[in-house]
Length: 91
Image (tube, rainbow, N blue to C red; front, side, top):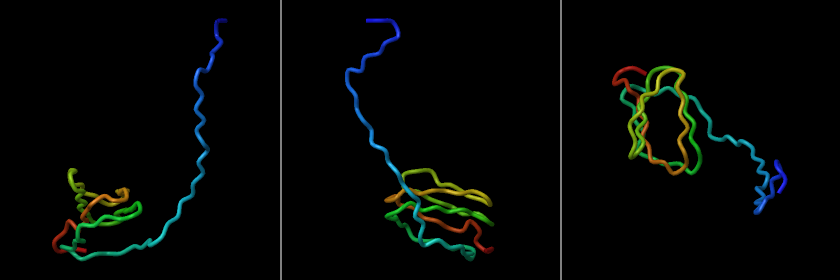
């Protein structure tokens, strides 16, 4: 065999995948102090960005996270989670 020549013994072709981003149900809202949403899971990715205040996100079997202004999170489909306002009195 010549130096620098590579012979492929097994070639596996990986198909080209093209994808797009489809967003639905987008909204912005302010919640009262003490607000919490029951444990849920979604069929699609959930994207949350905190603009003001602090949010506690609890994901089952993981450490809780506190998100503040400018923080964001992407939650995968089928992930059980709870979101709540960290403040008991403020919006």
